[in-house]
Length: 216
Image (cartoon, rainbow, N blue to C red; front, side, top):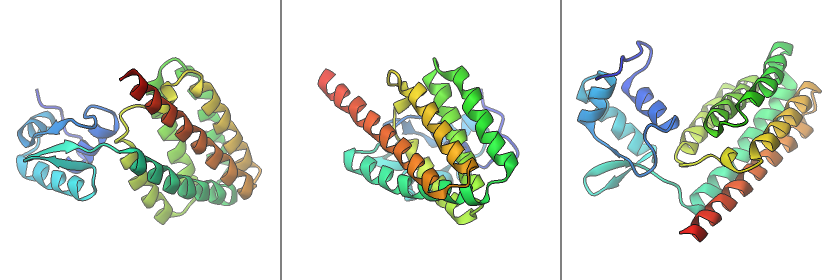
């Protein structure tokens, strides 16, 4: 049965969202006809969307098939390096430009996200929402655009670091420190807190991958 296509989303956005929420994972093959049926759109916009996603390196070729790309160790390290700098800048600008209302929303998120502590996938979605809010609070549209691209690529990681034991609780404490630095208008502290947060996330992910290799 075809899914109802939201009026404000095109084929590209629909496929991208499906990758982002894990409907299609790294290594999964994407077939035009199946996507057209799922989203209730014709094959032409699906084909154009797939070409666009391939150009952005979110899809890759496996023979004649298109599959969701995956990231190797070096690509992941490069992605975290860029993400840390850009998100650190977003936090620094948020400390300068965030409105009281935006700060309150961030604080509320930290509290509300405690409810997802036992659900890594839900916590991962909440985590993306929290980071997006910081991007918006920077009040820099060009930075937001670049971070959107970075976070699309983050969807190519098959697992979330928040699934590691104890990481969820630690991550939310780190979120709290970021918010308080932003609330205090301390750009340097906000930049440093966000970079520490992502450094811990990257370290956790490396340990997850090493453990996976050990278990074969």
